[in-house]
Length: 279
Image 1 (cartoon, helix red, strand yellow):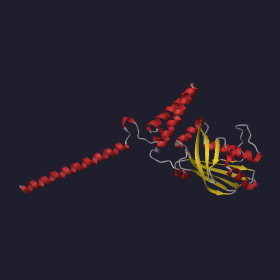
Image 2 (cartoon, one colour; image 1 turned 30 degrees about the horizontal axis):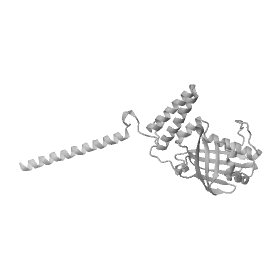
Image 3 (cartoon, rainbow, N blue to C red; image 1 turned 180 degrees about the horizontal axis):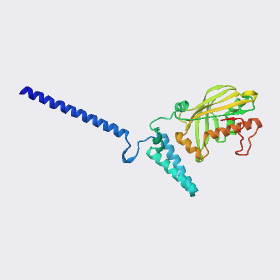
Image 4 (cartoon, rainbow, N blue to C red; image 1 turned 90 degrees about the horizontal axis):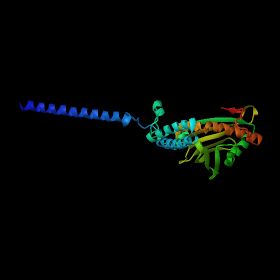
């Protein structure tokens, strides 16, 4: 009888342990489900990084003020976009990101990310200029000359032989600044750079000077990878205000071609024929 009771007691204990283990597994599963499920109050989990949230609030606030000033249909459209940006920044959730399966929350924005193109926006443009490569290289290498044909560039100040400080115009009448350093240079052929840590816009790129086919001068190729303050979303917002870098670089190269070939830049706006450009 005692043996039977002992067996029965062990059976009860075994069943109790199994029930506890199953309860623990269900609890753990419930926790994982809650972590992967939408947050309380019907809001989805955060999928926007901190830098993007800050930029969304900043741009949204500026758009709200601009919408109030303009009024009418344009003001209402700007107001609606401003509300969307402010909501995006406040909640850290973007419906477009959710639909596309994108999540930038917790992902650091570093110059390394800009260099490898994983988190940045890439732009490539080229133009053929009827001048020797060395002449074009030396003009470009003197960064004080760049503001002559780069319309959106306010100033470049050399810090030393390799480092420089840049100030450029940004959407809605603002400016952005960054420090850059030359990471590769071959006279008459190549200038490559990258922004330094702490820059408002992380960027890296190069300008190459290559002999054009048929002795037609020099092909100038610009490659740029950059991280706007709000990532690719920020690049899309910038397009609304005519500050999109691909168009900027195209126009900058057009003015560079005129300056080097004719000695001056035409004041007629929007009349570029596109001749000499490779998209």
